[in-house]
Image (cartoon, rainbow, N blue to C red; front, side):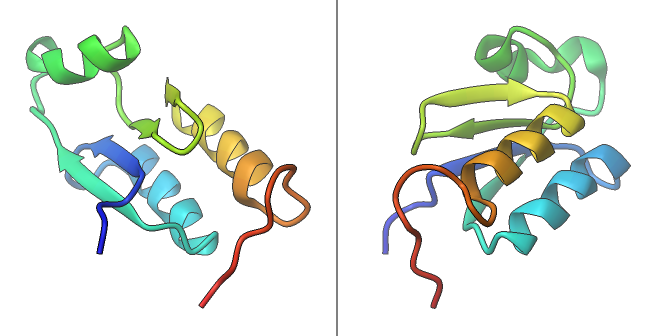
Length: 93
């Protein structure tokens, strides 16, 4: 089995991160969680990826998209993977 194409960078017990987790589950998307440093100044991994130190942040290898901000991510997931999403049809097991 291959690794999931979506990686979610998040903090433990972060309500904004949980909002994205709920949306990923709603669309039945496999994803990998990467828990990052709680100290804002030490979030270098996220800074290198998205240009910001904020979480949540996702990297979607399916589309080449990297983004942060939960509202933007949720909108992106709906637009890309929701009902009526443009692109190829998805098969849900």
